Length: 84
Image 1 (tube, one colour):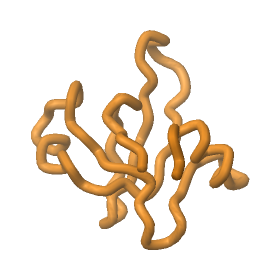
Image 2 (cartoon, one colour):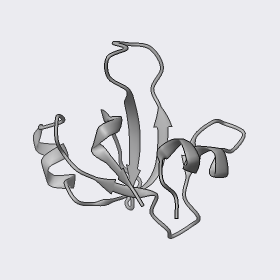
Image 3 (cartoon, one colour):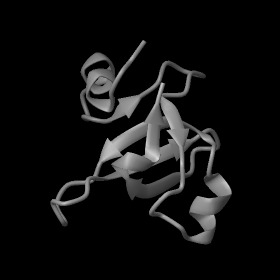
């Protein structure tokens, strides 16, 4: 069982530095907490299949982009991804 995004990253990192699940297997679930726009609220509770770090910005929050089953990417706070 994977206990953190960091642990998952160490296991699944590819040459581009992004994280992708085994095909067909989600890496976590998106929970709209601070990202409260309409698109995020529609995606609340959906499985996430890939994740990339977004460099720069405010250091008090970690921003990531997550990919859903349909291939759509969404920017969100790292705290909004609940890993398996």
